Length: 117
Image 1 (spheres, rainbow, N blue to C red):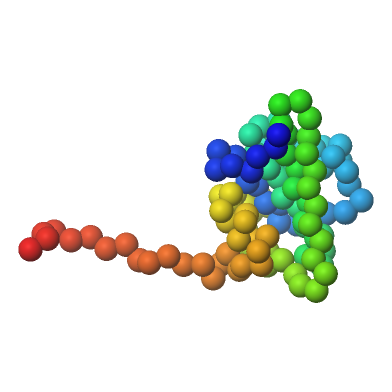
Image 2 (cartoon, rainbow, N blue to C red):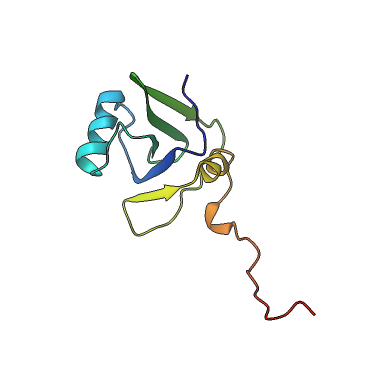
């Protein structure tokens, strides 16, 4: 069974793709276009031009999984980066799928002290 657990790496392809691509076309894009291994313990996330659809490609022991989500009245907030591929955590992927803007997510600033008292 395919699991989206924390042991998987998430690669998000920043440019829009032709959504007619199927498993073979996306696996070829991963290997030849991105220079990554389509068979590693990872998922590869692709979006269309309007950012209202996402496809997720992943390998599981003996075959590929292809998951797709289509939003009816919203858009996914795609991360802004200079590179063609953005590496995310599984938690960040869940946030993206829930419609959260990853660039707006900021944790508390770290602090360091010399003494406790």
